[in-house]
Length: 173
View 1 (cartoon, rainbow, N blue to C red):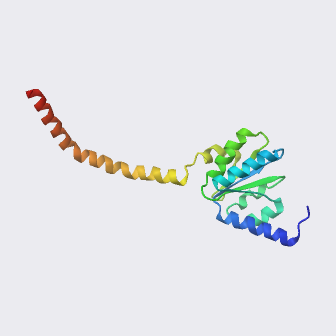
View 2 (view 1 turned 180 degrees about the vertical axis):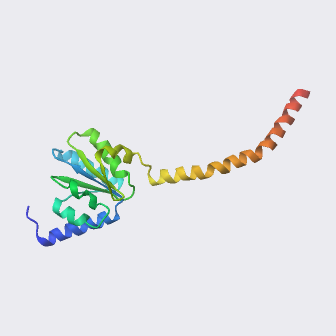
View 3 (view 1 turned 120 degrees about the horizontal axis):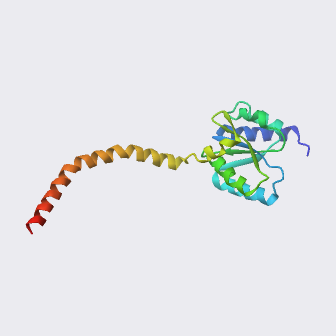
């Protein structure tokens, strides 16, 4: 399919805009993927806040230049599906971790996170990153622990005194 220059500029601008807002990206080889599987992947991606786009490699290189995902330049060969995580850095990795198990035709080529190019073996590590809400909950529990221990320590003498009186009362009965 022949694209006009205006169409190419629009595609580059769209991908560059998405890449500038994205937190992480994955380049996936999708050769041999069934249409039904691709449709299911797109539906699941919309639900999880992941932007999927099939782009010509030359247009993708131009769009990714000057972004944190310029490191993907070396893996942009052959048919590539670019997936950008917009809300959570681990969302795109979780999406493909689950999907690679279901279909053998899908192969993750590379992952870009924080301007670094990671190989496909790091997919499990990135997929295990906590979501934003999980990270906040973890931080709150870490901040809450010392206060909880302090309150327990301050309440211990009073608790012991009450237990002692209760034991004495039971002993007298």
